[in-house]
Amino acid sequence: MQETAFGELHADEQLVHDFEMQRARDEVRLREILDSYPDKNNIDPDTLPSETWGLLAWEFMDLGLRDRILAGMFRHSLARAKKAMPIYEQSLAYVDVCPELFESMEQLVQIPVLVKDGLHGFRQKVRSNPSLLRPTDKAVLMTPYLSGGTGIDNQTVGKSTPTWISERDLERESLALAFRCFLPGGFSKAMKFMNFYNLAHKGGEEIKRAINHLGAQVFLPRRPEDSVEQCLEYMDLFGITALAAVPQSPRDKKGAPKGGAVSFDDLYARKAELFGSKGTVKSAFVTGFAIPESVINLAQRNSLNLFSTWGASEAIPGATSTVLGPPTRICKYNNQHLLYFPHYLAVMDLTGAQPRFCQPGEEGLLLVTTIARDGTLFINYAIGDRATVISNHCECGRTTPVIGKIRREDNPGELSSGGCRYA
Image (cartoon, rainbow, N blue to C red; front, side, top):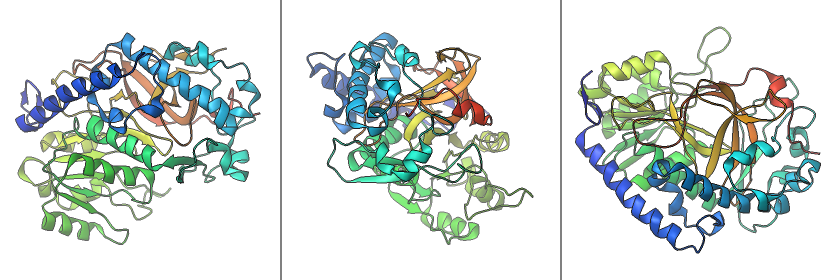
């Protein structure tokens, strides 16, 4: 495949221009917002306008400055969590946690790890009382979005727990998804988009909102009853230029497809001519699982913009890969830059006496920490995924670590040991 100074041939000049213009505007706007506070290192994130979380400038900020701003915001969230979140307010492990002493995100290693299962897990208590995860200080409508129900044994698998989300929370996350994931992933305002994710799920709802934020011409949802053939017919009829789908359909133990999902693989296998340089579909957001090498190879052969984003019911987005940038950048396909604000994702080693941040080349558990949310505040939450820190440097210019090899944790003991230790 030929490459340009900005990346692969399919990352055309208009996409690059749109991205650079947005980044320049965002740098000015973020500076205006931060300068409106007397102390930018002590901002209550609850007071920030929702647009703040969609600004590209966060990824390109000086590391030290960003850490001080993050730590200041987190002091407020941590203090609120101790006071208004029953799961922390009632936890003996949080008695000695002092939010006012928090000055750097590096200090997260000193805060208890929150686990869902095991002796110190919260699943069983929350299943009996879902309000343990709902803050008591916000009198607004909240939706309890349920997690996928991954567990460590027969007593926990399929037993979902809620993440309480307000309308403003959806706005915050979908703005981050739109401008900090979809835009650098090659999505454009002129696109005609088809969504293959369930709109009843939090991710499906936020994809719809993110596409609206970008100003797309068409948003076409796939209905549960639509077959692969019907979807392809609609894609052709409406001139779909971009889509979101899982890479491959889930399989049962015998290798046969299960469930009613329609995957990228299903679509491409039946009508390859719709995709890439010779077809109408120029961009694909493929997430939910790691992108298989076979799908990556298809994208490369057909000059198709292909990227992925890490997210879960508990936090969207947490990391993303890109399409735009120099050919030598690391953040392609399954290698994703961490995205700070409105969440903070960290890769930590929990095997020692105290948690520690993993260094490049090391694998650890993904821990989720909420920076800004009306609803459920997760702090050092072991969500159940593992990742490897690929690098702390990337030639795209972003200053956040790149992670990869993301997968579900297959050692139940590590997810249930240690812990926060709800007590």
